[in-house]
Image 1 (cartoon, helix red, strand yellow):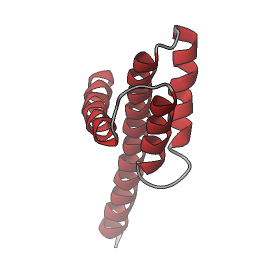
Image 2 (cartoon, helix red, strand yellow; image 1 turned 60 degrees about the horizontal axis):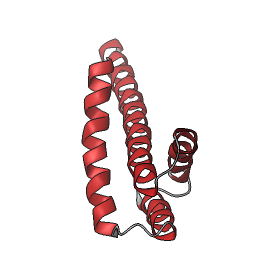
Image 3 (cartoon, rainbow, N blue to C red; image 1 turned 180 degrees about the vertical axis):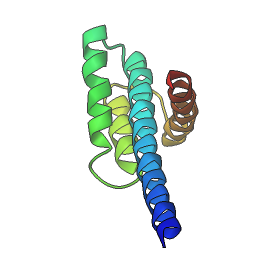
Length: 107
């Protein structure tokens, strides 16, 4: 019975660690996307910092990536940047890969 409980605790720990890692990757990915979008909009360094935080915050509105895509697309459209939703989705995937790479190198 002890082996089962130990295995169960190990699985619970792994599940919690996986969730934490996924959260960190998503947050870093969103910051990278925000930095990219801020560059397209010509924001200052200070404005870029604030914008990156706003993109991360947008991800808490609903499950999935649609809230982030909607925010960035709306902001880029308002700034007269010629970027499509597909462009943003592609950049989001690129940022996800980079975020994972950065987190792996930080460990």
